[in-house]
Image (cartoon, rainbow, N blue to C red; front, side):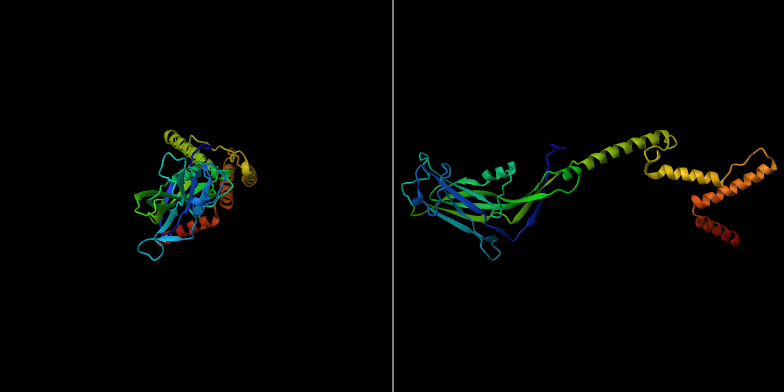
Length: 306
């Protein structure tokens, strides 16, 4: 149960608009190239020397609704000697997209979060127009805790993310170092994924109880009810039941004395007195006397009608 992987359930809802994704675009070069990029930020990292980003608070709507339908990113590499399409150059221009409402935390990155980094990562070239389409999803990750293993509802961490595709087409432009990325939603249906744990301590106990009930049913079916005698911790004196039983025996012994059956007629009178005393004890301690009185009245009324 501890090594059990949670299952994923998915639900789908429709939204009228989706927030535009955040876009990181970065280039690499052995030389510093601030003058070649419109919005360069030098990071000092060899793999991603220059990083720019687009993070707009824009909601994209469908064609039938009023609002913004597309976002165009126009990127211009000012250095004409730098050719991103040349495979011989040790340069590249990559673009990474992620949900704009995805907040970073100091918690360790899960394998799912690591997979998102490569899910929306693309390499772009100059003199092309790219159509970037995305759909939005939510993943509710279950925090492992003792309560979830017992069977109680767990705590979830909600993470929004996007899935995307990008198509390219040559662009007729007088500037060969120019490229454009058009961003638009592929679908306005939002998928929500939620982790669920099927195994818990309560489920295990329920399975054990069901197995035990099946065995008892088969035993009673084969050998009858009389073969089963009262047993268990309650019958052995748990929770005060032993004390109640002893008090009942004490009252019975004080109220009802068994007659001597060898006294002839006196023995018969004692037997009748014993039965009447026992009847009063039953009415007082076991059966509600008002119930017996109602039955007697009903029988008397029936006799009168007859």
